[in-house]
Image (cartoon, rainbow, N blue to C red; front, side, top):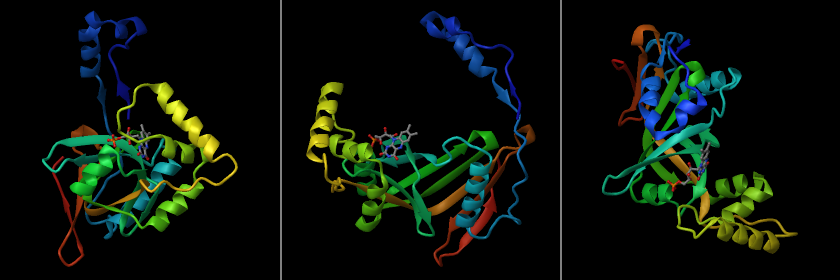
Length: 236
Ligand SMILES: Cc1cc2nc3c(=O)[nH]c(=O)nc-3n(C[C@H](O)[C@H](O)[C@H](O)COP(=O)(O)O)c2cc1C
């Protein structure tokens, strides 16, 4: 678990362009020895959702920062990938739900090409979970329920931001926000139709546990045609 650095990087070193080799040298010599628990294909849960919940609980109890933050990768219909962080808000045996603007780049891509992946990285535990599957819109009832639970500012921001669209400057955004703030001054903010949940319905999970000497454990669950999960190990 020890972060071994031969040399630390001072502020002045990190700033200028000429110092780039120093920065490169710094990241090159970062070496971490992983020491996580054994992850074994014979003792993991038979159901990957249960294994996920065990890991998430462990992450929360271990004080992992933003344990619900995950990298979502989508691709355009012609295969151009893009990735960004979103927050996991709900999960069940059908999949993993996050909320976003349906006109955003991620949603536009996912609704045209549903194949996507999410990734959790919990550095404090030397753990990574990769989940691949297909994205679908959730039932509007789920989106309404979650939207109602958000702070009012966040609700208004959903109206003010046409996420991923070009805007002239910050002022334009703030003016739009102020406009909607006035419109919804003393009334509940309704959910914009173009804002809601997307669910990733998994077809494959991979649980990665960092282990000493780079001999990490990787356990995969692959969904079979009959709905069962095949469990196997991959070389690290
Ligand atoms: C910690 C963190 C959490 C985020 N959570 C969300 C989220 O839940 N939903 C969302 O739409 N964007 C979220 N974002 C912003 C996205 O990363 C991204 O900038 C935005 O959704 C636009 O992406 P797109 O243009 O690829 O659609 C989050 C960013 C960070 C750094």
